[in-house]
Each structure stands twice: as C-alpha cells, then as structure tokens.
Amino acid sequence: MIHVIAVIKAKPGQRDGILTAFKRNMPAVHAEQGCVEYRPVIDADNAGPIQTEIGPDSFMVIEKWETMDDLSAHAKSAHMAAYASSVKSLIAERAVHVLSDTE
Image (tube, rainbow, N blue to C red; front, side):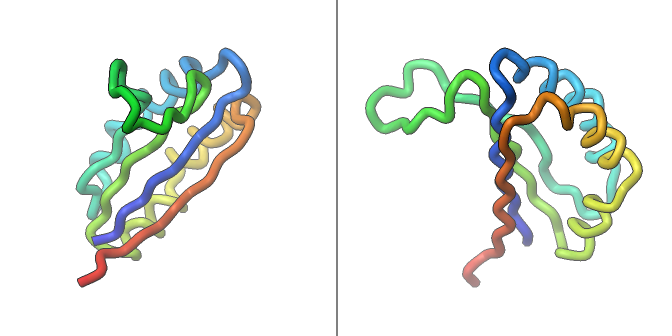
C-alpha cells in the first residue's frame, strides 16, 4: 500500500477556491485504478492541546493507492493536469509525502 499526505497552503483567503476545484476532481480520481482513498482534510474544531494546527489557509490530502504504478498513473492523468493548472495561481506552498508500510 502506498500512502500520500500532501500539505497544501493556499494564498491568503484562497483555500475554499482550491477545495472547490479539488472536490470537482474527486470522482475522476476515485475512478482510477488502484485508488483506495483520496480526500481533503482540514483542522478539526476543538481538538485541544494535542493538535498542531495546519491553519485556515491550509489543508491536507490523504491518499492511499494499491501500488506505486497506480500513483504514478494518477500523477500523469489528464484530469490531474487540468486540476493543477486551474489552482496553480491559488497555491502558496505544497509538500507531498509519499510513504509505504513498514511491513
């Protein structure tokens, strides 16, 4: 199993615009071969002192893929290129962490 955690920081006030485009793209991603999970997440309310907040202009993408080949195909897909192009001007920073199980 391949796990991806992408941290996206929007330019001030632009997070909702990115999330709108992201959610429009989700059905195409969910239909891809090997997609187990693909969704955006934001800070939970009232998490208390255990939480390190990512902030109001940020969100994370939680992904799971069956294989690295599936993830590679996802990254090269036309719908991901279109999504990236549509939100490029709204993003301040992006970090993508690709992880594998320790088993």
